[in-house]
Length: 265
Image (cartoon, rainbow, N blue to C red; front, top):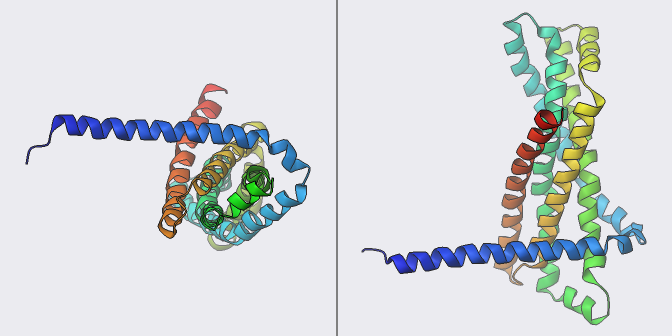
């Protein structure tokens, strides 16, 4: 059956306008969240509570993942460096890979799958059970009471989780490279210390984590706040949070890498 060109154009136009409408809604929502951040800092206990639920409860998966990623990098890096007689540079390769790229990116992806999905589901259930509407009736701003603390917790958690991920990865590489393979311990640490720059490598990695935290946190609270108040709607919003956050992290990583390590240095 031949498709009607008018119907195809209509469907395409509807899809484009729907995406633009949702993008505009997200921009207005982000502006509203930023406006109430100063109020949230007056009740810092809310941020501490969300830091525990989002950050502390993600420590185990982040540290274990970092340890195994560092071990894999050590094995793969040693096989490559061995061909050129530069096995002492294993620590440099692992540290730069973790601090510049894998630490911020993998931590953000793990955070999106572990914490952001839970935040979206929690806010979506609050929407489905009319808890957010009840706050409005009691003159309690849900943006300041529910949304902003979870958003700030994501921003504060991700740099710390990325640092722990990188530290665990370096420890895993040390176990494989020094203890199992037999690389010189002094060369492993000294070359790493001499090659990793604080401004170019560490500071840029922290800035990446902060930007990823803003993106992942904003996506998670937005999807939960505007989720359809049904079981299917909440599950769809949770899935959309993980997918959108992962794509946003990878896209932002490309943009930030080009800006930091190509355009600004």
